[in-house]
Image (cartoon, rainbow, N blue to C red; front, top):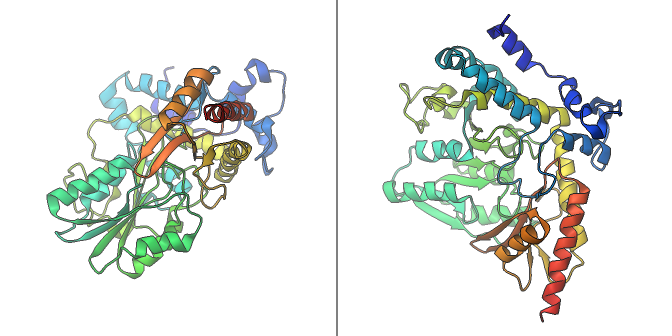
Length: 432
């Protein structure tokens, strides 16, 4: 009998460790090993390379290119790729039926699972396509008047900066800029740079939780507390922190929050979340018009028209995969990987790290420079000569190369990075 709706939902919604164990143990490297990921339950696996080797087998990343630009877009585990293909084939059997009458209804269980990970009410979460869409919904949906002030930094993400600039041009709001000198390891100093810009006319403060250029973590809650004392609303760009850092949305003290799921959750490309505090939903206009724009229903922010239902549904598999590892385990491993390669490179001549090694100020992402070399030349050499994919960063007062491992990154990969950086650093000495 063909796969009916009930069986489809039941089969796609199951989550045990076995779904991952089967494809893993069918690989040649693990075929004769009887142990499963569940064997590590309750253990600290931060430096357990056997555990992370198992995780690596769940991905289909190239064995010939070392991908250290996961901060842009992360690859999906095979189970997510397969789910996306399965949902897509299913939708194509009768698109208007299966998409609108089956998959569209399944957004509610997905919303509940996402809310559980985010630590909030499902009635505060809207599922959309990326952090830009989520944050733009807030930026353009707030009722700001001419002369109202918004505080933000020059190190915020360009899409958000451009959105605020557009409101400045069209509506006459005033943008007040902070220029951060990174890295920073002093909460009081960071908070003071924000509060010094607050005035009686400040209506919104825009805070980037992790600055994507260097991996700097900002003390969002402390800034938010100071803003709330002054009646200022708080918008948090969490594109790089959801499923990366171990926290819940309510911990931040924010009013609005947006993230992408195709980064650290390893969900299908083009998936994201918008969170709006329940009492704020009614007054926030949707980015895409809705028949009840002043409704207090979070779903008014999902009026996208035809959307990729398979992409949304496969996000459930990404959630299961993430939860199998655990957010705290993931955060600890990612911080360990960052420090692993950076600490080895600190001894090299002309090497400079532009990211903190302290867990409260950085996690997976690190940014470095080599005196005497342009950032684009470093990144090009790393790829052309060593097949290591990174990204050159030149933005405001930041210049260097960003390195971003993920849970599938091995220590051997990072050892190759270290040797490559050492080679480049030595060249700068010989060139003098």
